[in-house]
Length: 249
Image (cartoon, rainbow, N blue to C red; front, side, top):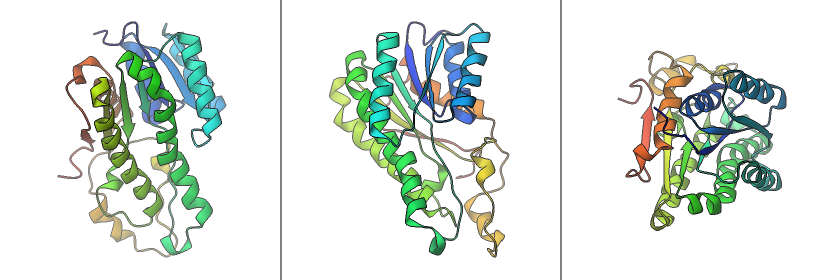
């Protein structure tokens, strides 16, 4: 299956986890990858791995919370490949802590990367995606749908991503642009390793918020993202797709 033959796909958070798995999946299906991440070393390793497998990939170091870097990165991707067919926003950070102890600096950092960064990438890519009648796939989290202690900023940022997706979907539907959102549950990624019950907290509080289901492999989320970024999803607009192993059932 070569759903992405001749297509250029920009993927943020491509240095590890679900972002890296998405780059692999789309490259396997013939896509040319614009891999974006703030971690230059790991990004280089991801791009090298893709190229070793015979895929077309280029790395672009970018902090998605910085407007000028985002604009320059999208421009560089289009200059390098000549177009842009899909944007997959996977980059994100997680911080755990008692809400009464979370600093404004931490709150702003989480929202600036997870929510504002998603918006900035969409905003910069929109003119090119309208021209190609392309796809945007954003990444939220089940934290946005349920009650998650010690994760107020993260949950709020991901809830914002869901709302942003729905707004963009309707606004640009007449331009034949598809905008959807994937909602992962627990996946075996470096981000998941950030979760630690804060000192002095009652760990049992997390039991209802995060049901005991098996941890997903990143490639399982990547397959759904690839689907939503392809022509197979042409008739899907503003949809939330849960990829959580049944955690929210």
